[in-house]
Length: 93
Image 1 (cartoon, rainbow, N blue to C red):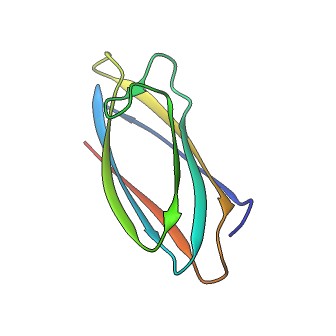
Image 2: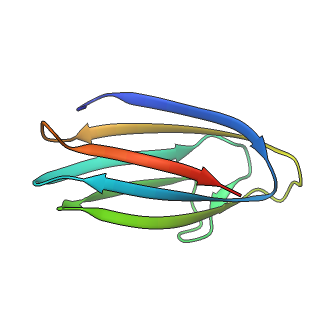
């Protein structure tokens, strides 16, 4: 849903993976922000992702914190998603 924000918080180890799946038949713009202090995405060395494009995507991103017991806190926002489009994020260790 456009402008809709979702939240995910949990405790896990120093490294987690996010599988991001976007199902869309038109243009989309979504953000995934890691609010955990000191954590970063290994793929781009930042604390957030901006995903845009057309069509479907299924990509895995790895995040690291440097702490064996980390309180992970994420915010996801769909900035532009057409009706019927969905964005899904699955978290794994």
